[in-house]
Structures are given as structure tokens and as C-alpha cells.
Amino acid sequence: MSEMLARISSEPLDPAAVEAAVAGPEYGAVVVFTGVVRNHDGGQAVAALEYMSHPDAEAFLRRVCDEMAAESGLPVAAVHRVGELTIGDLALVAAVASPHRKEAFATCAELVERIKHQVPIWKRQQFADGVSEWVGVC
Image 1 (tube, rainbow, N blue to C red):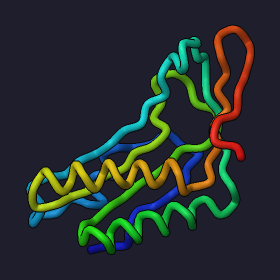
Image 2 (image 1 turned 90 degrees about the horizontal axis):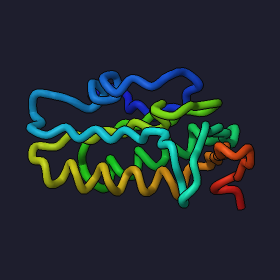
Image 3 (image 1 turned 60 degrees about the horizontal axis):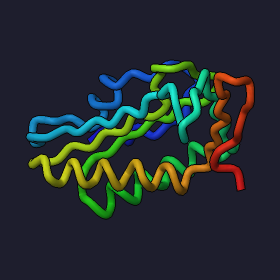
């Protein structure tokens, strides 16, 4: 297996590149999660998002991916976008490959949850009414 893909990026995300980072002839299942900027949250219309990350966020992301790979024995990859995003943009792409689908789905779901809770990335939602709100800031 090549070096694990775990990156923070200010560029648009490419799901095919994240999938390619985990795929292989020994795997019958590749699960790719794409987190897409939606047009609403909590009953309010969202116009855009801005993601900011701690300077060490990529190291946190790599640690999460390393831990998931070690625990599951499966290849994992994840790229999280930062900067200004609009509706429909990809904010997160995560992928896991396994011999069978059940393990790939379960591991990918857990990977996304850990990224959300352990990687220091904060989101500012810009609502259609002009109000903005930070999410994930302690």
C-alpha cells in the first residue's frame, strides 16, 4: 500500500483521487463519502460556508486516519477542504476499501465521525439573511 492520503486542502476536492488512494485488486468494496455544502441548516437558509483549520489540523487528520487503518486493518483516505465554499461544493471526501461492503461502510462511517469530532476545523455558516454563525468553536 502506498502512503496514506490525509490532507487539508484549499483546492476543490476530487473524489476519484481519494478513491484511488484506497482501491486495489484485493478489495471488493470501496465506500466513498462526500460531504456536500447544503443550502440549509437548523431551519435556516445557508448561502455559503467558510472552513478554517488549526495549523496542525492535517497532523490531526493523519492521526485519525492512521488509527482507523490500524484498528480496521483497511486502507483509509480523507481530504478536508478549507476556505470559502458555496452550495454544492465538497467539504470532505473520505474513502475506505475492504474485501466486503459491510466493513467498508462501517469503517467509513466511523472515520467521518472521528474527523468531525477530533480534527480542529471550524465552520462559519453564512445564512441567507446576512447573519453568520461559527460551528465547532469551543
